Length: 293
Image 1 (cartoon, rainbow, N blue to C red):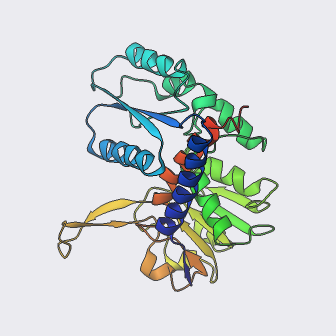
Image 2: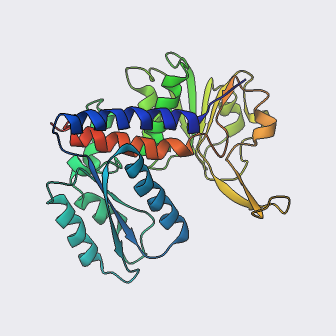
């Protein structure tokens, strides 16, 4: 069984990006610049944004963090996005989710210029990805694709089952795995909470990608021996044996499933670290005008 190490792979990608940024600076080019907008005081969101800002420093990017109060109006947030859209020095823009309930996520997403949408959430980027055109691919799916590639996992002609149909992970993942290319060319089944006989379907999977958002949902009886298992879930549960009082688990019951798998991502340290690496990669692509020209 191969343990797919996202932490190690993420560090490799960051090193490659840092090398390219050094070359750009040596050539007198423009330093890549990522802007993040954080609304409110959600603890998890602050942690995520802080990690993204720190990652920018590690690879030599410029970063801008715009903090807004929880009470900010939708109009004010849309204006902040528009100002960043119009700032020629900023290459990438992310608006950290979730947003307060009085703000429409769709309106905010649609306001971001596709050329700066390094989260890959705008209809333009989703459409380009679906057509296999150059696009900013959403960070988690991109991270998974990169793990499959760097671990030389064969995907062509394989049965791939995706559990979960979110716009952020499941749906784009199913498209990427079916596209003509590598990783891709798989026969893909997209399943979800309404799927009947789910275990029968998942047991056909050579590659099982689990993004259903339920702790330890996938058990050994749902997995074909020799399958590659990608666990996208992350959940914090109480654990008195830990100094912190909690531990992190995924959507897959790791101890049960790992002995069956030919390769598996752990939680933590699997898919998670790859999302920031993907975000940095997209920002570099934007700075070098590699996607939209």
